[in-house]
Image (tube, rainbow, N blue to C red; front, side, top):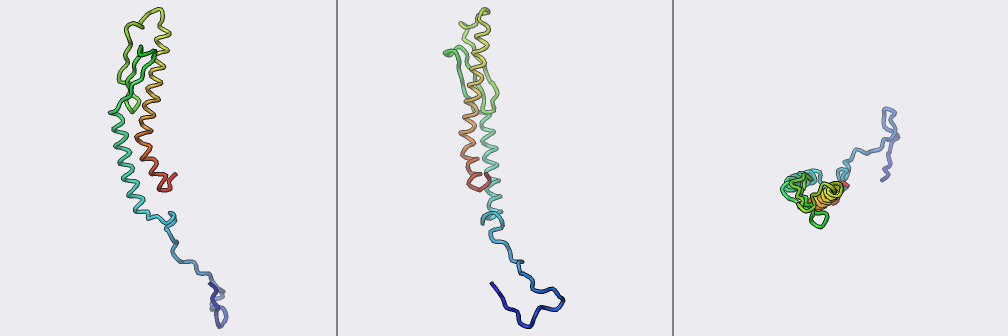
Length: 133
């Protein structure tokens, strides 16, 4: 908008000044209410904390060697138990047993991570909807 000024420049030698003291629209957050977003974040934070706590009470089970080795692990990736089929315990084949244990633990870790992603994914997806990621 152009405004014509009559009578010459104002006294004080300042010349014309641009106005610009108006409030910003949208609060700088893409038009979203910061208080509403804060409330949503607090609810989301509470849900994530509850879900993470619940993961510690859930378990996954993984086996190797056709059930020769079984590992039970929590959603916090803590091994709760390791079971060995007595038929595979052989001093001459200790290396194979060690390999089976490693395979079973790694599979349990992968299952535990997948379970955590499945539980937390819907919650962290909400962060994208708020424009945070």
